[in-house]
Length: 476
Ligand code: GLU
Image: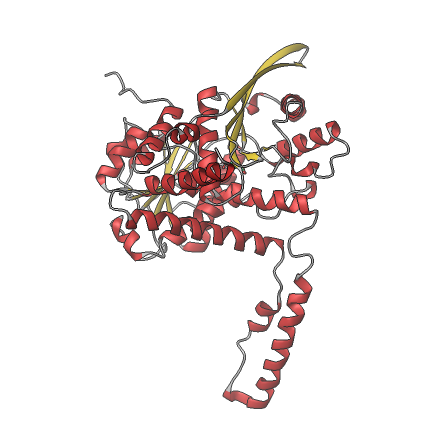
């Protein structure tokens, strides 16, 4: 049987955009202006490695410049192509608008399998790619600020930041040219886990709304919910770990490149992650049922499905078999437009990518602000906050001494209350607030507008509305 025809990733994003924009009343031409990708730069460069010249192909796509700098990760993967980076850049525009990070949307990619190269070779390749982008202002603190994505992390971001510094020795704001840097290279606490943490905060917020939980046919809290996660990379690992350790969820299946693991009584996320680090995959892990075609586990019974790997994994071939009542898109574009129609029809609640994985860019925003202000969050206020708390604690202590056993301070109150917020606490607080506010803006449209029946359309309506407002303010 020939598989059903799916649109490309970019077409899929456009279809979803069109579905939403049809419900809006935008001035003529603006719809088209917002949808199209402004520019995509393709570069082919050579690096001499292992005694010969190797040519690599990379992209940086700028979807919308209604706000600058534009923002979005750089991925290293063999599947990178123009259609993909353009789809991802468009999602960045909508994502930033939805969570009110003051950026336009961009994305980059390099067609490479990082596992084919050793660290030193990767550094040479990354620096050369960065050089090509920097000299065209496609990496620049005021114009275009990349971040990690699939196949890249803080190591690559540190190389990019250093490359920028070498080429712009007098730019005092140079560090803000890229986010997701290591903490000792101008990064911020909490960025590495930010996307996974954001997925957790998104689910926590979803479970604060009984009406929404009911709509998915679920009840109660996150405690005891069965979770399936696809992809135990940076995003999937942190989301699954936090949900398991802090919210009482049971991770009943983990799907990786080389297969899937299942255990209805719950897999130990940390142990599986350690196994993968040691053995390169999940095969052979002792505590779980392994199958080679891990994607079959996407179709298992569960309460929450977290696709955290890549685009297009829930598509026309498997959408009808998906049983999860809630899907939270930790990856970008894991559900195709066709699959989205089928799942919506079935009553599945999809918490869409542009919201669900926005934790990464939210904390990137904080890092960028930190770099531009040249000071760590909390540095000025922390001790002052502690001193004021000390005043209250002393006063309460006074009461405590006088009232005897009529009133006793809780044992850990003093310690907890006295501690002023450091950078990590502030980052978490800002991220939590952002995820709550963005969810509420989506659900207001979801429940408040008769012609909106799903969260994805609601998310598009909110973000397109914001982008349109910026364009209007610019006089476009
Ligand atoms: N690559 C991440 C994303 O898709 C993060 C982007 C950023 O921090 O700029 O959202």
